[in-house]
Length: 281
Image 1: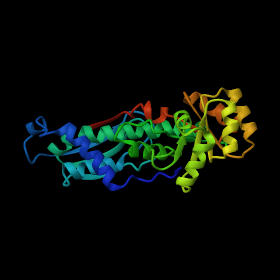
Image 2: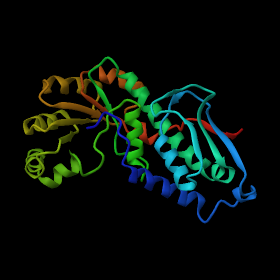
Image 3: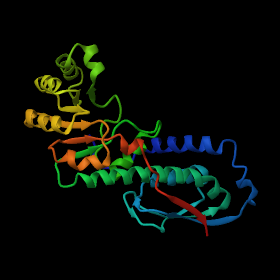
Image 4: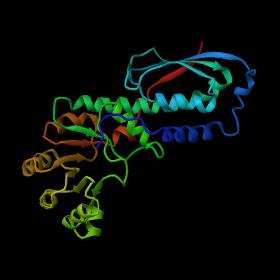
């Protein structure tokens, strides 16, 4: 699991932007063509609300693909805390290019800033406990790396990136493999370098999982009382993660139960984009 925010590889950012421009610009920005070619302008992006900024690499890459001649005069650092009416970005260059790039840069910056802001709220909620908040794979298709980066910028830890970099043995895996012990043993044998996590749905399954000794046991939709009992039975043998319908108001009380991780789909699935506005000036 990764905690430090590491920008996705340049080819990932480039592909994100290329796909966004392809669906938005298509064969050309017909409205921008109403502006006489050669007209220059300056544009500023202002935050209309408080939050955590994220998305600078995608903004810069958007202008690189639209028009490398546009100058990024100012852009907030990812992780910067914004206040209402604060200037976040400033650009200068061909007016047509600024107009064509506007929606794409705002879409990336608003989505990723909203994700980082939500993640920051969760990180603050569990501050002072040993628990860490994790994101999930419940991301916008095609933008997982971007949203997971934004979540880390906001101060939480990334869970697995996909189906390839860690084991998460769930109910159907257990049934198909022939039990928790069998599944864990096969995972250890096949890829001893990967983290092995087992999801359990009740305390009996927890006991079975603890015997199998994975790295992490995930308590799925446990009540507060069941979580407390699971922590007691575990006695720090493995890491304990909880998930299932957890929202910001729940995070602090769950963290105080002694769990190690709280995984939350809400951070990347129910994102409220940060309100940013671009104006020529």
